[in-house]
Length: 182
Image 1: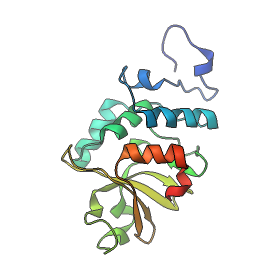
Image 2 (image 1 turned 30 degrees about the horizontal axis):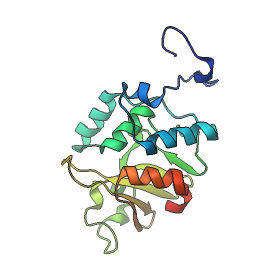
Image 3 (image 1 turned 120 degrees about the horizontal axis):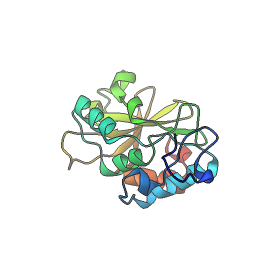
Image 4 (image 1 turned 180 degrees about the horizontal axis):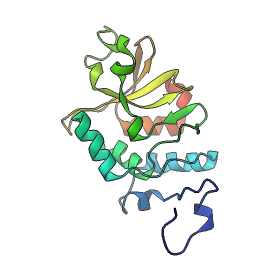
């Protein structure tokens, strides 16, 4: 439901979802350039993202999993909580926080691979490509200063690091297209 007061028709979609600007969604906080570019990409492609995640939802995820979300991922989720299951950006989908999962819970083969990360249990899926043919996952930790690389994981447990951070992932997603990171 749109906020009370003046409703701008261009911002109220036919799906009945009120689309906030990135600044409105984050309480006026600025978002990084890659997030602004991603939101513009989605608008241009006709993709209707989910409404922003609440701070309570983000805190609940962090508490339940005993992790910290990296700042750029938190800002993205506060601007748009992923894409609905019924929407795709090409063949890509970034998930709402309620659908994040530990990679090893879905892909047990990711454990103990010599060519994989030393700590696969710390990777949480936040997106997928080609309707779950591959999964993008970020390393989360209970240390807010820890690095948060992003890896692609395949069903056989293999994969590779696609970006050193969520910010770098989003930059590549927008500038190089997501299919180059699957």
